[in-house]
Picture 1: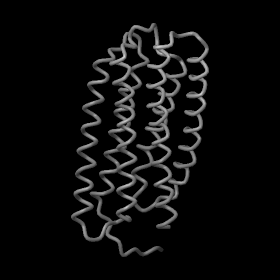
Picture 2: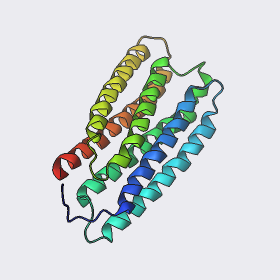
Picture 3: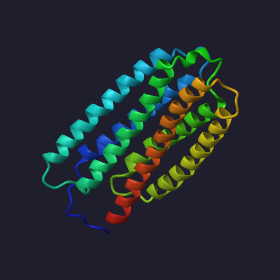
Picture 4: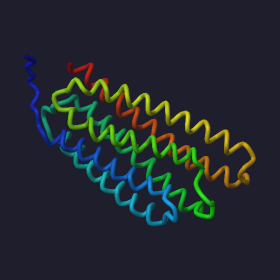
Length: 209
């Protein structure tokens, strides 16, 4: 039986759970871009609100870390984890905002490969929300989290590469290609940020176990 001198302050773990739930909520809104007749403006506005909520969560965590003498995890790891979680929503919000600002509603549909990118993000968000409650106590099931997150990130990479192939095939006008690629780059960055979160979690697990 392992004994730890570190306090098990549930406030810190509750933050990570809340952030993961917020990310899942945001990705769920992002997925509405694939719906028929989707209102891109409203989707973008709703995601601004979700991203703002997460910013407030992050600030509260940083204040808690700064005011706590002994933290249940290495404080640098907590800063990194919170920052990577925040990055996910920053990229998701940016992607939806660009879809609206660039007037991509004029297209019949967003490219299938872009919807596949979003589908990967939905799976990653679900995985994250299920894994974060296991962070306290370093549950052995966390190993499955970073392995599966890596696999999903590879799926996202493949969808991104296939989208690039389509964009450069001549199917779309040059200006539309540029717009769609910027959106795709934000989605790819969000996918990578999920993997960055899993890397931090793995580092914590190795360090604390």
